[in-house]
Length: 341
Image (cartoon, rainbow, N blue to C red):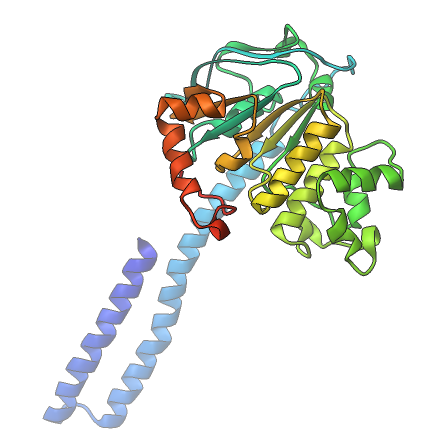
């Protein structure tokens, strides 16, 4: 507001000076030279006043940044505990509620079971709580109330080291380091042979792209993977997670930047190579989740619908509406994620 106000006032007073100065010149009360000199002095003063608005704006940004830095620096380090081995069994959410801000629940009374070895698809609008579900499962946040179980064990009783060693999480924006493609994939494993690196890259449908680079797997990517396309970055992130061989895999909208054919190929490879893994796929795209064993539709922090693709289509509700809208798109647009759904 200060910035906008200062710009308006300085422009208004310049307009008044020109108007009044012109009248004075016509009446002979002011010479042309004095008029031009006055406008020049005024212009010299306008610059610092405008800059003051920018400074006030930047100070407010700096205040927010300092608060965030303070929050991180003063944070209590997590207790990772000991490695308790490999987890196995169903995932169960029991009356789970969660909110980032008090009085603004993001998840409300979530009751959900994901049987071992099955695939769960999660679809819903932005802000419906899809990603938050997986953050709670991975121990990044603790539920306000309710329990989450893996193989009959409350995750509060499982060490974070064990929990995160058994859950592979692929985000929409995976972070790649300024190292070679091979090193970015291998970083997730304690040790990795070139054959193993290439195998997971093939599963993630990125091997052909990497081999097409001049230096192949020795190609250095820029910080955050700036030299790769969005789809290539996502597939390298998927390959990196697959290197860990975890029994639980979560794909948080991590196929949004790939086309529908590649999306289908990756899911087919996963079902073949990681047949025993429990997989959770979050997406805005119906074609990504439609082949899951169970699909849930999230609305306002609640599970609005649940069932297979055929069951949800028969209900003729939200899922059917999204399905019809996306499937009615031209073929060249079906692979584009619709964030508005």
